[in-house]
Length: 470
Image (cartoon, rainbow, N blue to C red; front, side):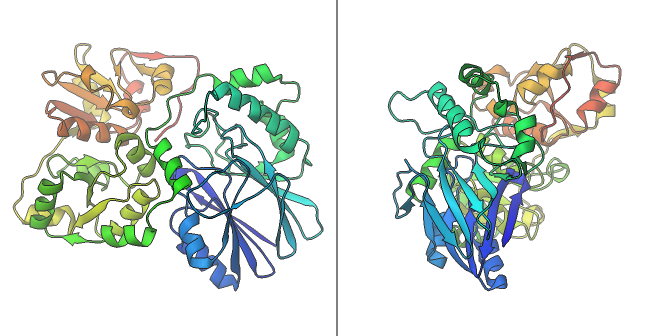
């Protein structure tokens, strides 16, 4: 028996490879099929099943392309209505995989179709559950992300989740391993652990949502309290996973088009394509193409793309470091941005060599900021509201990057602004967006927030500790 977690840190997402006697199954695959095909080929196995725990909202699954390339059967649990052929499993249905079995446990709550898969070993003993977004390590799935039918509310779904956990999952033996779809950093839960798996017995002791004496009313209140609005791309991704999407091979081929600076500029003007610069933040601020938006590959790239680019069909032109073109197209496709129409051949250096116009954003370190700070400057703190509440510079205005498109009216192009976050990644994104919208009186502060508040700058600090976010 082989059970392997394939974890993608930038999406905080776990896919799974299971194999027995030359037969393999994939659970919740990412969009690109290569790693799964290579794994099966190297082991001499055939992929027989693709199990989906639910309609994912935070990434586009690879189930359709993988099924097309392998002939594997796509399996969903009850209530999953799709625009393509799949096997709609019944609650309790058992699938054979070599000497193993996988049992369908319908666990609605995160979404109506949410399903947990129970793996039993060669001896028929429960070994692990693949819980999707039903049960995380330290948390449970949000009940507000489903594409709801009729008058179904998040409180209704939370009630279902309570029942699913107590009737389907908690009765399982304590030694059973819990393999969820996500870990810390995902927006599909509120307070997930950095650990990516655990035993069910340990979760019964440590996970607040599995407290044995918790009433349904307490549970509903706990899981629906303090939910931030979901990222704007979530509903579109869920719809793609439900109804289907373009082949990843077609998307990659289209995005591979290398453009000279002249062709790049021509297409940008003709298509109104978004210029997306994915280089490092330190490199970007030294010089970039006017109106380009920075979202660096080195940070939480795909989630920030999804949060900040509202239209998945938006044409995109890429500026990357040399050799990173394919990676950028692939990581955009993971969250449904399939309309990359090319990249700048030779990177930003080719643009400069062609004598094209270049823009910059003034960027300073935290020591320089300390010398320039006074209580009259306008300071935008682009971290999340919870981070701001935990500790912030007294005079700073909360201006979360997550909601910058909606809150643009809060800033005045006539004013001079300093921007900061926790490390400089988010503030550089914010500065690039503001610069593209005509704000030219900006100073970007790169460096640790702890360094900003360690000096003489007045700070408000709450009793709780700061959250760590990229």
